[in-house]
Amino acid sequence: MEERARRIVAILEAEVKAICADAGLHPESLEGLCDGLERDDECCRMLSAPVRDALLSLLQLRRDMLAIRVHHR
Image (cartoon, rainbow, N blue to C red):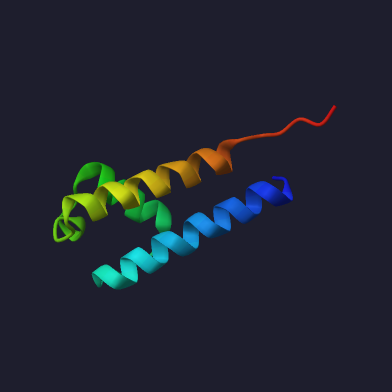
């Protein structure tokens, strides 16, 4: 992963962690949190809809960024 993409992923992770801390949520992993949000697990039901949507969007973007492979010419 190129440096710019790594910085973006780090920013996304920091934002997710800050939102979780503000909401009183302490996930063991970001992947587990994303899965829980997608499945509407009980641990995530206490979150308001806007917070849930924001977290899910950030985590899905993070997942997409991690999946990108840049081929240099």
